[in-house]
Image 1 (cartoon, helix red, strand yellow):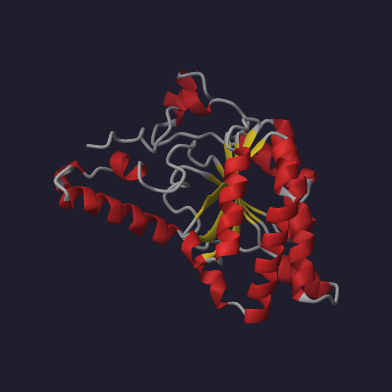
Image 2 (cartoon, one colour):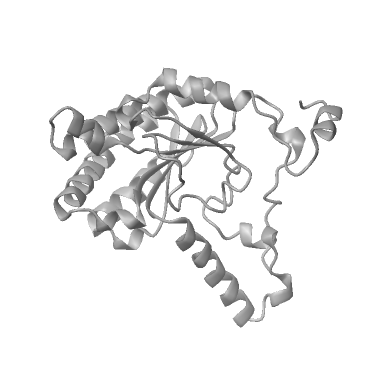
Length: 258
């Protein structure tokens, strides 16, 4: 039987620092940014790609261990065909031109999501990027593409079902801890801080399992305008919160992690 993962509820002592280990971002507002400037939609995505580079650099500099960005959701295929094509072109361009820069800066690149729907060229580029940066330790950049939180949990359930069918697991042994072993990013710290830009206050099917104990931060800033100062504001807000994980404030304070 496969060994279960650690509990999805972190111990107080593991999150005592004021800097989140794992930051996840829903990068919303590229199209609105372009429209406000009278520009076509793809220009908003290009500006958003510049913002990604800046935030990756800054997050690594301040000591974030893992940064996960929602680049393309499973629902984004519903967008106009021209916009999807432009996004795929930008994605391929980033893979061919930017990964080497990330590698030089010690950033490990990972992709999560159902990658099978992408072209063979894109899939090969993603595999190459992961292989090139596999041994980098400065920060892990996780890029969620064709990703949905419900898909993630269904995918994990299918893997558990296969273990049951093969006699390596009983239904009674399916626990949250064991489920957590099969979801995406099972080997990485859980999300501490989830940021959404663009003024919307929803998580849009993103990391439903991994954000179970995350702090949420919503900002009106459109993604291309989200810079180091905006990230500092989010980190400062995170540092001001008391994370209890089901305990009382008194328990947290008595443990010395107020």
